[in-house]
Structure formats: C-alpha cells, structure tokens
Length: 203
Image (cartoon, rainbow, N blue to C red; front, top):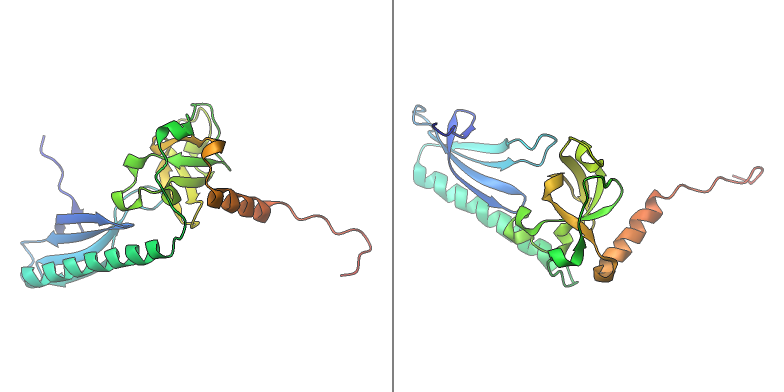
C-alpha cells in the first residue's frame, strides 16, 4: 500500500526537521509555476495532536528557499541555547529506576509524573522537561479508554498534550530535585483555597 503523502496545503512536504518545539518544513508543489517552494513551521501541540502549519512563505528558487529553511533552523537553535543559558540548576535526565510505575487504575490528575525520555526530542531530554503537572484529559483518569493527557511542565509552566503511554511513572521521593520540590510547593500554595474572611472584619 502506497504511503500517504504528507501535505502542507498544496505543497508536498519534502523536508521536515524537528527542532525545539516545532518542525521546520520545506514543501514542493511542481504544479505551481510561480512559487513552487514553500518554507514554514509546523506544530502538533494542540488538542488533537495534528499538524498545524504557519508562517508560510513561497519561493521561486530552490536555493533561496533552502537558505530560508536553514535560517529558521538556526533561529530555533539560538532560542534553545538562550533558554538553556537561563537554567542554573543541573538537570540530569530522570531514569526509569528512579520512578514508580503508573498503574492502569491510577488517576493522574493534579499529580506530578515523569515523561519517557524517548518521547522527548533530544534537545529536551532533561529533568526540567520530564517533570509535568497533570491538569486533565481523558487519559488522566484511571481505567479510562481515553489516551490524551494535558499537563504543564513543572519547571516552566508550558502546556503540552501527551498520551498516557508517553509517561514513565511517578518520581520516587528520594530522587526529587530541590527545584522540583520548591516548584511543587509554590504551585500547591497558589491552588490552595483562600481562607474565608471572618464576619465583621473590616474590608
């Protein structure tokens, strides 16, 4: 069976390199006589995990398109380098033996879990991207037929969609980094219900 072509609009995806939180895409449409080459970004971080193309520009010349393609790649690399430079704590990757397994009946909502290293892109295989706070999704419920799990990274608060099988386990308490304990305490304090004001207290 012939593999379905990946398309960005009318352009067949010729090159797609994942870098950071996006893919940089080069597309070709041989029927387009004016601008047969397309360069754009693609992201799958949405409710359904489908391709979303944006920032598209068409080009008449292949080499010019490739120059733009490599320029976008370089921009993404520089953004990642800048991001890494702001992290002062060591972030060694979390390994399977540092985790307790997730059982099928475990409810993940409101808990800290660890993503599998092989699910993350190589540039994100560090603890700050592995530790996530689960906020919802059908896959977060125990014994659910759903797979989708929505969560925020504990370190940065960035929101992502995962599948339940992308999660490695619960981090064992003895392996919890200091920064993670501080972030968790901060998050729990923010979500704690405010105490009711005593009756008659001045406003």
